[in-house]
Every structure is written in structure tokens, then in C-alpha cells.
Image (cartoon, rainbow, N blue to C red; front, side, top):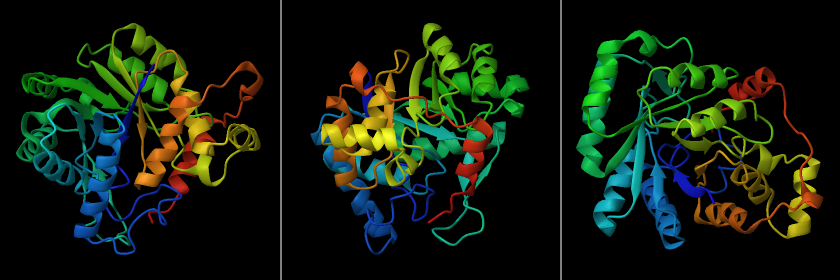
Length: 299
């Protein structure tokens, strides 16, 4: 069965686009309070058996929070993945006009890998290009390819946008990567064929945004709500169970912002969607899905 892992996108900074996050976080989102919240969720994840944590340079202080947790707890069996390419520029201001800036350059990679190593050292086993798209200059930058290979850890890439499948297939041609992290959920399943190809090619497939940035929890489609009610779980568990049953998935990320959200997400591990409960097609046109995602406010 695929592994459930914890992603820190919602825990490393005071503002993010996930719906349903506001009531899960501390009343004060200062650095100390968010660090404590992140550690609480990490403790809950570890105690429940989760052993994979995914961070990014652009997730505010997520790498810093994770590093301090690892140092305090001494856990040596946690798989850590992180990402480079976006830089967090909001300076801990929830009302910042711009929260992150993307650049896939050799200079950005070199600096961000150095910053990641300064915090997490050799704990990182997978380093991913953040939101690789078909128009990224990375594809033609052979000097960057060499620099990535030289760091000595597994390399991956994440994808976003309506052309995820195109980016995945183009990246497979590079013969650089051993993992891919993409958005897949019942509202946006368009990357599935390309992810299956990646899996068949030997890449580890991680799925992010299985809850559509909280839309499937706060505004669940009626079929998701009905199955959740029948099973006595939250709509989040049903939506994540739909991800877990995909044959090409290796790791499914929970973006929980609290221990309670994580425990609810983990109910997906015991949900069995028998034929009677199979969800009908709920997919939105990719362009509409990603336009809706882009319209979510940082809160």
C-alpha cells in the first residue's frame, strides 16, 4: 500500500492558500507559535508511524522547524525530502503582496542547496525541483544538470498547472530524476497517465494536494460527502483514499495543519472504497481547476 507522508507547506509560514487552515493554527502565528505547532504535528505523525516529511525552501521556515524537531527528538529513521526553485519573500507577513518567487537557475540551486544543507545536513535524501513546467530553462541547462547530480542525493521534481503531464514526460527524457511529485485528486486527475509512465520507468511517485488545497474538505462534492457519512469518516479521508488506491502511487502527502487534521487524514488508511462506494467522475477541466486554485487567497 502507498505510504502516507507529512508535507509542511501549511506549517512553515503564517499564510498559505489551504482552505480550512485558519481554525487549525494557533491564534498567534508568530514564529515561536508556528514552530511549536509544527513540532506537535510532527510528533503526531511520528507516533502514528509516518516516516516521511516533505519540505521546501519556499515553505517559510519549514526546514528550520524540521531541523530543530529532528535535533530535539533524535529520530534517525525519518526520510526527508525538500525542494528548491522558489524563494520565500514574504518576511513572515501574511498580507504580503508576493509570498514566493520562482527561478530555476544554477545560482538559485547552488545557494538553496547550501541553505538546505546548513539546516538539515545529511538528513535530506531527496531534493526536488519545485514546480517544474515545460517552459523551465532547466531543461536546456546542462551545467545545472551536472551540479544537481554532483550533490550526491536522489533528485526529483514537482509539477503544477494544467500541463503537468507534459512536464512529467519532458522530465523523463532528461534521465536525471528518480522521483516526481504532482498534484492528483478527484477534481484534477489529468496527470494520471503520465504518472503511471513515470512509475513504470522506476520513479518514485509522490502525490500532493490530494485534498485540492482543502476544497474537498470545506466544499466536498456530494458523492464524497455521502461516502464519508456512510463510513463515519471525514471527506478528507475519502478523498485521500481515492489517491491511495491509484496503482502508480508510492507516497501520498498530507498537508495537515494540526494534529487533529492529521489524524482525520490518516483515517484514509482504513477506508476501503468497495465497488458500491466508487466515486463517480468528478474531474474539472484542468484549466478551470488551476484557475480556481490560483484565485485562492493567502490567509
